[in-house]
Amino acid sequence: MTYQDLGYYDKLGQNKIAQNLENFQLGRIILEHKERYIVKTPENEFDAELIGKLRFAAESRYDFPAVGDWVAFSEYDKGKALIHEIYPRHSTIERKAVGKSGQVQIIATNIDYGLIVQSATRDFNLNRLERYLTICYTSNVAPIIVISKTDLVNKSELEFIINQINQRIQNVPIITTSHQTKGYDQLKNHIQIGKTYCLLGSSGVGKSTLLNNLSGKQQMKTNQISSSVNKGKHTTSHRELIVLEGGGILIDNPGMREVGITDAMSGLEITFDIILEYAENCRFKDCTHTHEKGCAVLEAVQNGEINEDLYANFQKMERERTYFEADAQEIRRKDKAFGKMIKNVKKHRKRYKY
Image (cartoon, rainbow, N blue to C red; front, side, top):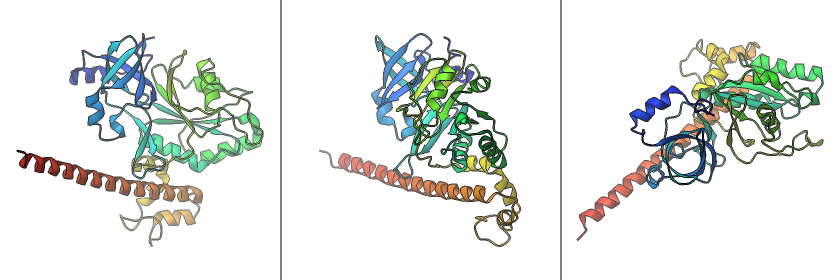
């Protein structure tokens, strides 16, 4: 194995010199668990933790390592290491943290492609698919749609699903797979050496089966599909980076029940580009496309030029983005006020110290 097999790119070497990190080893986070990390190099794997300075200087989740990160580290014992620095990320896939207003959860970093997996059975949901697309576009990650378990539906049902996707989503590859008829060779043709792919999708849609077929190994144990819900019984409980024997890097990811949108304006503009095209012809520049007279978007919806479900999903996700942005600003305001209070307390103590 080489660093290129792990996803090395030229800018890492440039950053290593610019940040004066030549004396440290270079590795990639392949597993994370409660601020403990497994760092991989072409030769070894290390059980690592952050140095105290890096931990205490952290101001947000972005300042901690995540699966996919490149880090500078030093070995202090056999198989034990300390992480001294996180290299700049070229992409970060994130979602709104569940139950935490204005906060994010990092799914994975330094991703090139997002494999959005949906089952051809009752799990298939176009609105959710557009959410994953928006997350990918916001993160500057190229999406690939994978429809799994196609052996559980008939030919006409599968054609209906593909037509639904094509009506609302353009210029995104669609690959169909099944446990019986395979289709994994088509997906393998999309896997490039040195590129990193992240599996995205709900629990039970077949991500672990897909991982096993791509890797050629039983990386994740899977059971037979439950006849009651058409879902596999296996559930991935953690994120893990796996280097495929045939080339490419795959990050397995636990199924997500909620796919909350963060500050995803750029992603929304790409996912719903048809709405933005019509919006340019609105009478008012600050048009919300909800009730205004002279709104070109509303007119296009009424005329059938914009799909009503697509429009409704856009409005829902735009509201979520706005709420998240407001919550995040409120958190920043409180953090700033708290920091100012701490500064004043220290200043007061220093003044009356004797």
